[in-house]
Length: 333
Image (cartoon, rainbow, N blue to C red; front, side):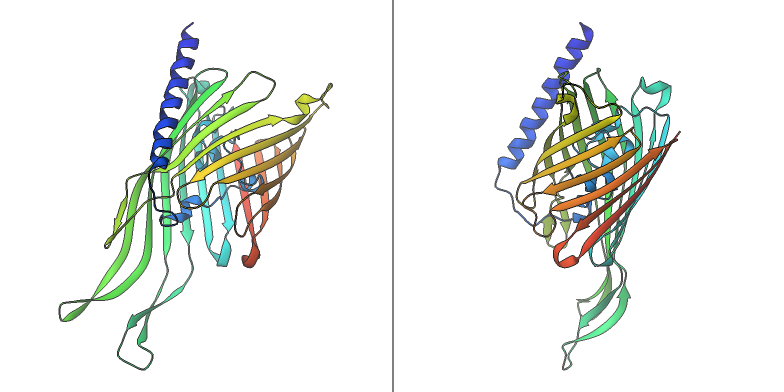
């Protein structure tokens, strides 16, 4: 009876949150004018190989980057992952995540994440009264970072919730600007705090599961004379092992299908599809497709998992930017 009351309360809270976020989206929002876009970039190789359809993915500590509720069913005491994303134009994204599950998960799972972005080398300039109209200044090395703490818990054998708090920042180099009759050097930095929240619900019908998440919920950030918002994203998803529909399921094999419907603040709605074949929970083949995406659509990936070690790789053709590769290593204890 107590579990039933907890489940009903959890469903009500989820419905309330969805209503609030839907109301926010219903307002007249500016599109294509969000900042901190690096928070929207997928780094985890498994998730990206599934076309970013990761809302219902139970992906351990890496779930903190998509749906924190997916961390709730971690079955080990400790998990550590490191991901490298060779992003477009040689931009380097690196993420690290650590999860801790004390007391066998009876009080939930705690996680820490860190992300760094290296945009490479940029030549600085400033206005000048010469034929070109500018002169070169020093080389700039713009970068970004994000760090967060998260928590997830399974409130019942069917319902899980999770959330995280992130502190992010961007350093966009220095600029020389006029101030009165002189010139001053200005450091272009800005910071933001944001929240992520998500739920997952197992229906009880075979392996069918639903999920919901919103990411990067924050106040507007002020920079110079402009305000901008973080890339707030609301997503609902569904997943199921398709082999459960067969009269007799092949032993040691799974074929998971993932579907996400995403409503971002900064670009049109998207539908992401993912398919993952698992053999003996050790070898994995993955593919995905992203609808309504300008440069990327189809994705591929492979993975191996054994003796507490995991390695995942994904490859994404990226239109005029050629391709993107991601690598993720993981260890559980």
